[in-house]
Length: 418
Image (cartoon, rainbow, N blue to C red; front, side, top):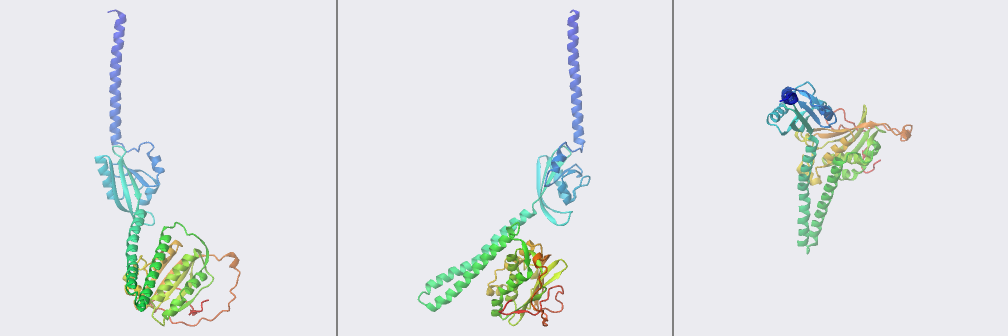
């Protein structure tokens, strides 16, 4: 073997040995990286940027449940970088996914750390992104579930309520057909048939109104609305029913106040309160509709001297189709939707509705709405009507009634509305 062959052999041997050494070095480096990755809590590159762009609450947690990275919305649930997950169920979900791999989901209730601090139904999804890190994505599904439950309840309640007038109309039509030879009976059945048809029409109209209030994102027509016009329209619409029931409508309080909103919706809401007050008031009594300004709000109070509402029923009177007095509601043709419409209409205008009631003494429903400035064209216009000294009225409720409701002055509306 000459020197050239020896050199080539040495070169080849050196390449083999060098390759083997390089392979050992690369293998060692990879093994070290795997060990470091297994024991590392470092967030992989790009994960923080992805979290920053997410609308849902999302966090990356290590084996101890400590938050290593988070989205901006995660702070609403008290999940901040460097702190432990605030909920044991989330920590358990992360541990189970880390141990078993794959994907894990759970539905649970979390309390918000930010205002309002209320329980929220969430869907949590966990997935492993490294041997020690787990990504948790938390989606708030409270509103979705509330709307779905509301839809189910609404369909069930509406179907149940429609059965009564529809069934009555069917039976009365059969009775009219059977009594075709008896004109007197036909007239009686026809009157009852007309009453049931009117009840069905009223129920359908109120269902549509309530559905519109609950589904619309914004009010259709928002403008400066005169509270005087709202109250006047609501009172005038119920003068005849009040006269028939022997109830006097008394309107009073502050004048010239304005709110922002939809006049038709507000008139219907106040009208529902007046209608309820008339329906539940004894003959010879009065229903007061008063207006007053309280700081930056307008309060419209409707007070009656009727049968009153028990404390248990006061918690439910604004529910759809709920009636505290089933028998009276059937006699008056009530649908159980009036107060629910009031509640949603007032809430859509940024206000609230309160109730005070004592059994046997009467009730006061107070609508509070944000005060708006009077239109510029009306600011300098004076009321041309002469001032009248208000007559004294008996109190519509007893001394333990709320003192912050608007007390109407004596302006009876007994068939000659303003």
